[in-house]
Amino acid sequence: MNKKYGLLFLFIMISSVTFACDLCSVYIGIQPQDFKSSFGLRYRYRLFEERVSKISSKTISTNSSARLQTNNNYSINHLNEETSTTNNYLYTEQYNSVDLVLNVFFGKKLNVLITNSFSDNYVYHNDSIIDNISGFGDLNVITNYRIINTKISTDSLAKNKFLHRLTIGLGVELPTGSFNKQSVKGYETSFTPSTIIGKPLMELDEHLQAGTGSFNYLFLMEYLLKYNGFGLNTNASYKVFTENKNNFRFANRYNFNSSLFYLFDVTKNIKFMPHSGINYEVSMYDKDNKKDVMNTGGESAFMNAGVNWFIKNLAIDFTYYRPVYQNLFGNQPSNKERIITQITYYF
Image (cartoon, rainbow, N blue to C red; front, side):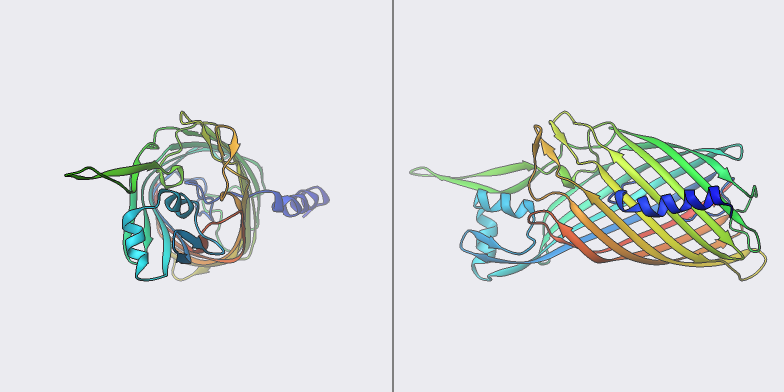
């Protein structure tokens, strides 16, 4: 590696701490056969949990959720009844997404990545579902361009070949997803001489929605270095959000990933690639009517490990993420685990 490329690589690694994102619907991972178009199906799972203690109408927890704080203000009847017999419960947020991924190449250097998703998100108190929001997400269109590529091959991860590559990308997220689905957060009871009336209390939770309702922009950078089966894949992204029709604006988000991998040839047409690395993400406060939303934002670091199987024109990937550090602003449930798995067909 000459001095020019060495300095470039050093700059990327040093600047990595300023990039992060919350594994938005675009996943940048290790990809084989980088100059073939592909179609894929990807599943993403995120879990947040916190043990919450409840005394009268006050919730005590080192990391309780913003939704819990709102619920307490409402003095929700059915939640108070549940917690009157038990002073603590497990609060859980579970996010599930299935993405359709189309990656189309135009020559050796340029490709366009198009993704859309369907999300099904849940909030639990112990084993009871208290909220469920589902719907289609926003459409992402990203253009990637390789500005450095020392080896042009139809299989960039082929063994015994040196590869040194730098890719940059620009993307836009279109507000095609649902973002205005309200949830029943409890009931307000009123009494008349002959009637008891229960009125549902509705709330729009921006964070449970499948879409954002806004035009958003994504900036990407990826570096790949490989020699004799060993490799390093490093990428960074910065996502810029704009304000939606509800005057809500998600905070800009930064993401950095770096993974080491090794490619094994099982047979002529089957390859196996274990990989392991780190993920770091950070964002500031969301904004509602240009005011900071408390109990949002923070930073987290994850260790990850996974495997890729390449069978002719088919690829199967599984990656597991476990948090090793988190500093969330205010009261929020803690990161517990994440899973990303994908099947891809190259054509």
